[in-house]
Amino acid sequence: MAEQVQDVPSAEVASRGGSFLFQPVGARAFMTPEKLNDQQRQFYKSGDEFLRTEVLPRAEALEQKDNALLRELLGKAGELGLLGVDIAEEFGGLAQDKVTSMLLAESQAGGYASWATTFGAHTGIGTLPLVFFGTEAQKAKYLPDLASGKKVAAYALSEAGSGSDALAARTVARLSADGSHYLVNGGKMWITNGGFADIYVVFLKIDGSKFTALIVERGTPGFSVGREEHKLGIRGSSTTPLIFEDCQVPAGNVLGEIGKGHKIAFNILNVGRLKLGAFAVGGMKVSLKNGVEYALQRKQFGKSIAEFGLIREKFARAAAQIYAVESMTYRATGAIDEAIGSRTSAAEVMAAIEEYAIEASIMKVAGSEWMFQVIDEMLQVHGGNGFVSDYPIERAYRDNRVNRIFEGTNEINRLLIPGMIFKRAMKGEMPLMEAVMRLDEELSDPRHFPAPLGRLAEERRGAEMAKRQFLFAAKWAATLGPALEERQEVLAALADCAIEIYAMDSILGRTLETGDLASLRDGLCRFFCMESRERAFDRARTALCAIVPAGEVEAQLELLGRLHKYTAVNSAEAREQIVPALLEAPGYPLAY
Ligand SMILES: Cc1cc2nc3c(=O)[nH]c(=O)nc-3n(C[C@H](O)[C@H](O)[C@H](O)COP(=O)(O)OP(=O)(O)OC[C@H]3O[C@@H](n4cnc5c(N)ncnc54)[C@H](O)[C@@H]3O)c2cc1C
Image (cartoon, rainbow, N blue to C red; front, top):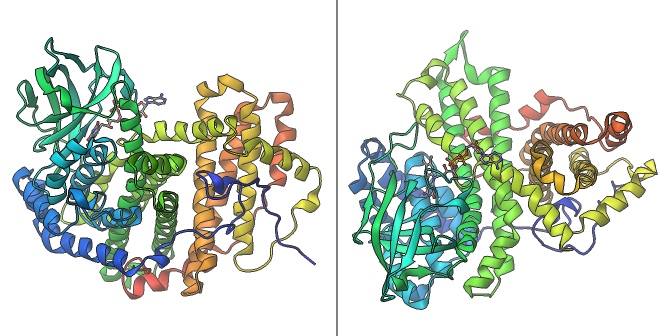
C-alpha cells in the first residue's frame, strides 16, 4: 500500500523564521485569514470603509498632487484610529497586534496606490523608527501627533549616490562646539511624503563614519525640501529630495544609538517588506474585481469574453496568486505576533520581526511581482480599454511598477533570502546541513519517496519535493564557499525556489486546516501548485547548471530529477474549479 510522502528531515526547528524549508507541509498550524477575530475584522472593515468613502472619491483630485488634501485625509484617518495601531496606548495609539496592522495596510491598498504609499510611509517606515527606537521623551513628544495624523512622518535613507548601497550615504553631521546641536550637510532623494511631512527620520554619518538616525523637524534652520518628482506612477503621492545645508538639529534628536543607525534602517525595512505583501493583497483583489467586471460586460464573437478559456485562465491564475500572497502574508505576520507574545519591549518586538526577515524579503519579491502579473493580465482582459486612462487598470499598471524598486529592490531582496539562510545555517540557527545530509541518505534509496495519499496529495508531494530540490541545490551552492557571494545567478535561483516553497507550503497548510469551500480552495491550490512546483524545479536546475562542473552536471541533474515528478493536471479542470465562484460575485471570492 502506498504511504504518505515522508517528511523532509527536520531537527527541532519549531516556529522559526525560514523553518518552512525544513518542516513538512502542515507540520504546524499557523495564522490564516480564516482565524481573524472579530476585532481584527472590524479594523479591516473600518479601513475599507474609510478608503471607499473618503479616499477613492478624491483620487482624481489627489492625482493632481494635492498635498493639502493628502494631509487632510491622513488627519481623518487619524481621528478614526487608523494611524495608531502600532503605537502604545500611553502615546495615543491603539496598541494592536501586527496582524491588525497588516489588515489595515491591505484595506488601504484597494484602489488607489498613491494613498496606500502615503499611508504606508507614514504609519510604517516613518513612524515605526520612533515606536521601536525612540526614547520615552521622544515618543511622548512625537507619537501622539503621528497617531492622530496632526503630524506626518517620512523615512529618509536613499541618496542620489546611494540607494541599494544605503550605508554609503554621504550626508554627514558633526556636533557643534557647545554640544547643543548637530550640523547636518548633504541631501536625500526620492523621499515619500517629503513634500509635506513634519518629522523626518534621516540616516547620515556622524563625523563622516558613524551611521546614525536623526529626527529632523520641518522648519529646522538649514533644512529644505526640493521640488516634487514627476513620476511614472503613484503621482498622487509626494516624492521629493531633502536638502541639508548647515542644518542645525538638536543633539537630543539622535534616534537610537550613534553608529547603530543600520539597525534602525534595516529592521524597519523588514516591516515595510512584509507590509508590501499586505498592500499587494489589497491591490491584487481590486484589480481582479475590475478585470472580472469588465469581462462580464464585454462581448466579442457574440459572447461575454468571460466565457473564453484564455480569459478564464487569467482569472484562475490571479485568484491563485492572491490566495498565495494572502496566505504567506498573514502566516508570517501571525508568526511574528506569536513570537512577540506578551513581550512589550521594543528590542523584543524588533527581535521577533527580525526572526522573520527571510519571509519579509520573500513577501517583498512575491508581493510586488505577482501583483504586477495580476495587474498586467487584468489590463490584457480590458484589451484597448486597458491602455487608456478611462479605466482604473491603466493607472494601477503604472502605479505598481515602483513596488519592485523601493523597500530594497527585488534584486537586493533576492540576494538577501539565501544570504540569510546560509548565515543562519553557519551560526547553527538553521538545520540546513543536517537536512542536506539526510537528503543524501534518502537519495540513495528510492523507497524514501512513496506515493502520497489524501487531500491534495500531489500538491503536497510537489511542495515536499521542491524543499528537497532547494536543499540539493543549496548543498552545491555551499561548495562555492565565499565565492558564492559573487554568484548572483545562483543566489537568485535559490531565492526563487524558496519563494515558491513558502507559497506552496502556505496555501497547502492553510487549505488543509480549513473545511469550508473545500472545492474552491483545493482548486486554488491545484492551480497554483501545478505552476509553482515547475518553477521551483526550473530554478533549482538553473542553480545546478551554474555550479556543477561540466563533467558532473548530467549526473547531478539526474539525481535532481529523482526529486521531481511531473504530475499530470488538467489545467482546464483546475481552472473551472475556481472561475465560477469569481464570476458569481465578481472578484476574489474569499472575503474577510
Ligand atoms: C516613488 C519612490 C519612493 C521612494 N520612497 C523612498 C523613501 O520614502 N525613503 C527612502 O529612503 N527611499 C525611497 N525611495 C528610494 C528607493 O528605496 C531606491 O530607489 C531603491 O532603494 C533603489 O536605489 P537606487 O534607485 O539608487 O537604485 P540602485 O541602487 O542604483 O540600483 C539600480 C539597479 O541596480 C541593481 N543593483 C544595485 N545593487 C546591486 C547589487 N549589489 N547586485 C545586483 N544588483 C544591484 C538594483 O537592483 C537596480 O536594479 C523611493 C523611490 C521611489 C522611486
